[in-house]
Image 1: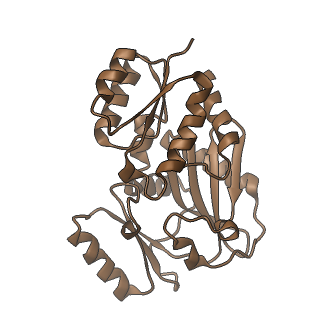
Image 2: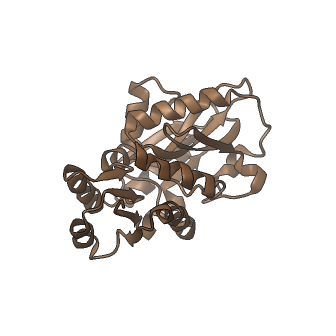
Length: 264
């Protein structure tokens, strides 16, 4: 029998989503009767190295945990998502990789609709890490506020009007789901309100899936989620891409797809 463990991400990396994140990890690991341990547990390293797991399903983001995952991979453990992929989802690194590979991301230049200023050194840990700036004066002030918090790595993206669509996928499994958050009201920080109610503009979902899968392969993050803005003409841009979201809208289906990665 495969020895499987799940590593839960630290609470600071699960803003307003601790229970949801735990639930998807439990749903996956239950397929293998595995054990879950938090990356905040001081015994994590000793536990993982002593068990010598065949597979680790991990939502961890702390640097020390990622180093441990590198060590486990070197010893032959299959790690999902790999530490490299989690590091590549650091916002500034991700933005650079996507631009270099001609993936559809918002421009930095003024679109006439304002900007988003985003923490670049890590995924958002609070509402203050992603800020809408209606004009250049607001953008300058927001940058100063970030610097005062010790955040000097930032990503600036032009605001793109259109429908906000969330997507969830498991690379290579065929699993890919989308939803309009304005339809069900579920929100982590409430920023979806900036784009308003969805118009349900027509777009090619298959093409969105192909772009999402291309991104997941590029950054080496097979369990992924993200946000896209669908423009009125059906074109779209990817405004966010994350390692292992909570899949709260499609948890059971996603858990089966994620568990299937153990076979590959």
